[in-house]
Length: 94
Image (tube, rainbow, N blue to C red; front, side):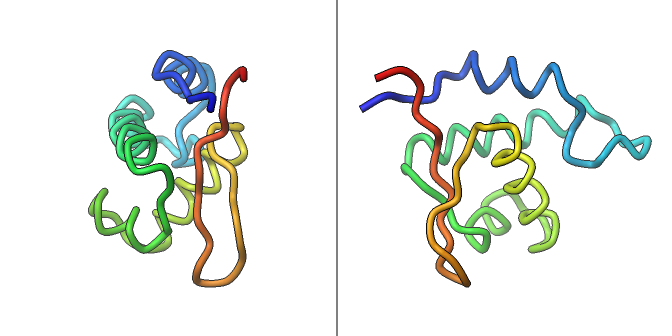
């Protein structure tokens, strides 16, 4: 089973603006949260929006934005639908 490497997460996060959408927020301040989240997701294998919000201490809406951002960047993939959606790391290599 392939794994998402920390270097890949950092590379993707550093080349694009943060999930705040570039509205003047501290882009670098967003990255530690996303990096911490990816560590947790890799260790566990998946995360739900509710669990992400609780673990990262953000609102459910912010959790959804962060997770959608990571899916859009190709770091996570979405599995399922409705309240049971799980977000899983996209595997590198083979």
